[in-house]
Image 1 (tube, rainbow, N blue to C red):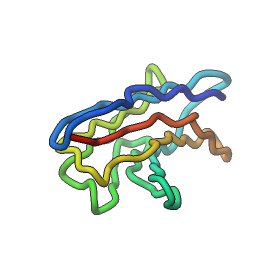
Image 2 (image 1 turned 60 degrees about the horizontal axis):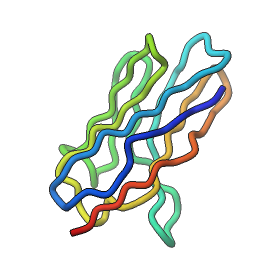
Image 3 (image 1 turned 90 degrees about the vertical axis):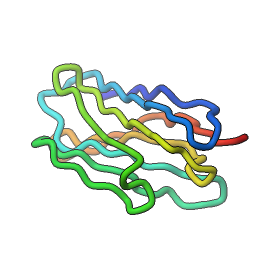
Length: 114
């Protein structure tokens, strides 16, 4: 299973970005899909989860600003990020569970700067 993340970039505070992560390979079905992020000098932090039934969960710092969604037909997870703040600057990683195994994407850089 391979994951390809995209959509990162440089954005001003208050702006928006949409991250995508497409999975390919031997996949029958994907269970949980998650986004994590890692800011410089900090540990990797969980950001959001979407379960196979569509239920979602978010870290408090992004609630009301970020939305996780999934396209099961295309094995893709998205993260819509609105009202971005300086502290959202990080490398964002997608993470999916296929059966008992977890897979990570390569990371995409999000920089919020004026």
